[in-house]
Amino acid sequence: MTQPKEIIRSKRKTIALVVNNQAELIVKAPFEASDAVIYETISRKQRWIDEKQHIVKTFFEKYPDSVFEVGESHMYLGNLYMLDYADVESVVIDGNRLILPLKEKNEAKHILIGWYHAQATDVVFKRVQYYADLIGATYYSINLSDAKARWGSCGAKQTININWRAVMCPLFVIDYIAIHELSHIQYKNHSREFWKRVETVMPDYREAQEWLNQNSRLVNIY
Image 1 (tube, rainbow, N blue to C red):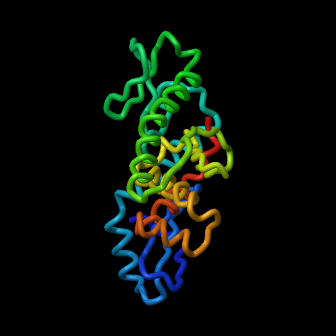
Image 2 (image 1 turned 60 degrees about the vertical axis):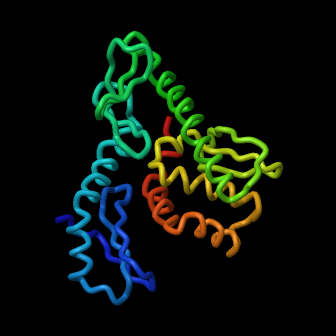
């Protein structure tokens, strides 16, 4: 069983497990939570912990030196895929492999980014529209951004901008980004009313925030 690097107690009501960018387990727990309860939670979530530590060790630490060789890890919708090449005409997902055209290997980075953009245009835009209809938000347009410091923004003219890298995130995180920016159409700052709106639509939005905090390097890759 993974031993936590740190246990942080506070007035929170639930136990949260966080794997940081050093692949260390951090536990956030209520003051009244006993060690037995904390370690039972760790044991129950061991598979999840292993998966998150794998992401850090094989992706976030490895990516800065990526040369797009076979076996490298790349993320899509929160899942890791191993890069491979074959005689295909376009990017293909097959099991745990992300397959790029062998004949265009020298353009692998360009091909992969283009594929991510196409997927984001489909997946992310649909999620924004779904939640816009759900909460009755009217926006002028949706655009993909290449921001290096944020996942999304809402412009003064009600233009929704979503970082194309959001398509690497799990769907529930994409939903949070969409809800967050759509809520800014009515609430321009992060007021109490703003967060009430977000929570009304997505009661567990803090889990998405935790995921983004753990995987913040995603916004700066490619």
